[in-house]
Image (tube, rainbow, N blue to C red; front, side, top):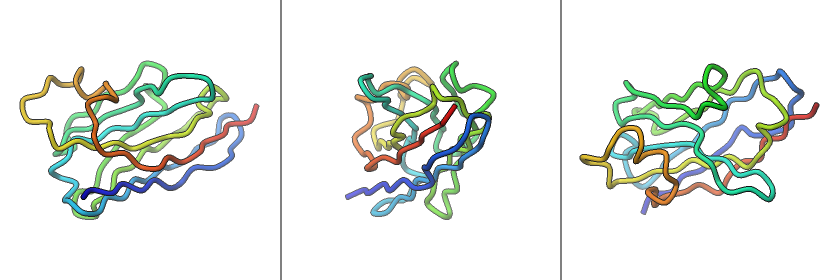
Length: 130
């Protein structure tokens, strides 16, 4: 059984930075396709970023491109999301997600759909004040 646990959320002012972590247990991170999603109050969960198993390829939602950086440390079984130049519209609960069923999947389209991920963390709150 795969468990994902996020940490690193908090309250930050506009323009500030936060680094989210997603620690995995129960399975090697290198065998999972990974992504970050977020959900703001009253809104649907939306894609933020994804990264291939090797970490060589990354993909971002247009809304965070150039401000967020996704990375993974397979040896440490942890994925990260470095967030800079944060804006109030980034306020949301951030979730890390994992999937074992990634062989042959279309990159990056398949990885942007939350329904394709079977493993989810509990979420970490990010609040950006104006």
